[in-house]
Length: 210
Image (cartoon, rainbow, N blue to C red; front, side, top):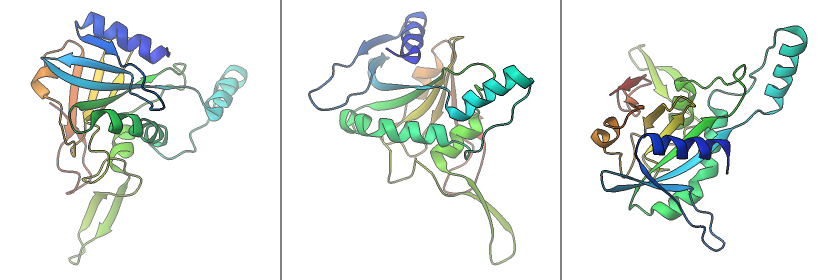
C-alpha cells in the first residue's frame, strides 16, 4: 500500500465515505478502490508523486548550497504520465458504467512538492497556443500533449489532488462520459470542485471553483 493509498483511506474514514478495495483480477490490472457517494459507485485510482532524479539533485543542492534550480520538464509532464499509466485499468473496469477519478498524492518533500492547478490543466487539456485569425486577432487555445479530448479518456471523470490536511480538490473532465454528480461531492467536507470557465474547445481558460 502506497502512502497515497493510506492517506486516501484515512480521508474516506474522516469524510464518512464508504470505501472498498477492488479485488485483483487474473492477468488484468484493476483500479484501487470503489467508493459510494449518495448510492452512486465511483472508481478510484490513487497515484503518488515521488522524487525523480532532478528533484533528488535539487534537494542535495539545497542542503549543500542553500539554493537549487530545477524543473527542465514541460508543465504537467508528471501528471500526464500518471494519467497514461492509470488509463488501461480504469477503462477496463469502468466500461461506461461508473464515474472514475484519478487521485494524486504528492509524496515529495515540501521543498520540491510543487503541484499547481496550471500543471493539472496542461496535463488534461494541453499547452497554451497563440495564433492569429484572418482579422489579425490573437487566439489563445489549448494545443498539444492533451490527455482529455472528446474522443480519448472520457471514462476519467476528474483528476483529484489529495493533501495530508484532508483536502480533496477535484478537477472535472469536460469530456467525461459519466460526469461526477457535483452536488454529491460538494456536500462532502474537504472537497473542492473545479471546472474550466469555458469549453476547452473554445479557448485557453482558467479553472473556476464551483
